[in-house]
Length: 320
Image 1: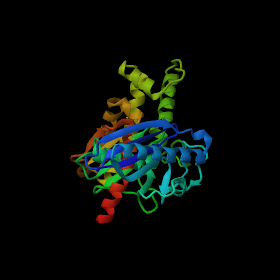
Image 2: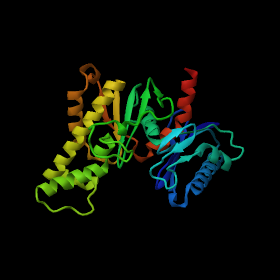
Image 3: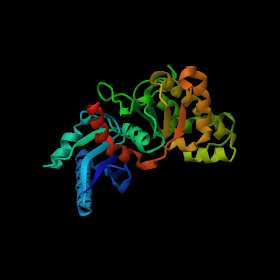
Image 4: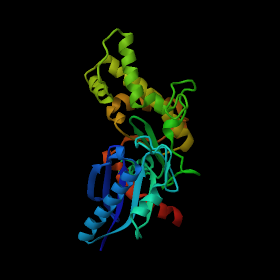
């Protein structure tokens, strides 16, 4: 019988799910359904349970045995409890997701693992994406927020309480703008999409140019490709700040590769080229040697793929 791993990525808008072939790690099935987050945590957990039941039925009809289930969620995740998930209304405290999900799935005997979505991203890109072939990888997702995950010596590193890899909340400027976490000058507050839009509008204002209504990072990136000088400068300044963060990661973790994904990363060379330049100028020379900074390959399915790999990774950790 063919065996598979199930992964689910819990997002504020959609839940993405996959079945991976346990041997080849190729996607067998992928699906996306609405989260309906406005209905509250109880409804979301019931939707997750329904999706798991559906995929188990589909797998059974195809003579596939599901041997592990993984779930990724935004927020700090420790021992199956999700804390302060920013995109899910009512999840700003502590939601014992693992316990509540198992309650909705009585009799479930398949191992279930829950982790932070950026950890899942890093795991997926390391084993199936741009970081394949490397044992030490920093994964970074750039969007409204900045998420991070660490794969060190081929294993996901969570820290003592599950809070490791909060790379978006490393301090870049001690008196910088206030971050949603409460600190000042976090990388997230400096290179997240809100900061990029503000930077662009500020530049246009100083140049006495009209503000662009409903501007987004995608529009700024498009304008940069058309040689809009304010857009080019905005992305270059953002990349330089990102490079400061990357230098810190190189000096702290000494990775072989940094994999960058998320919507902001779609700006490509306009952000990444200045980021790599600044990183090389600031990081210790022996930590820069051989480093690869790569764009993520798995797109919006990385979280679900990484979630499917969680139990596999944990089993490897226990064996070691």
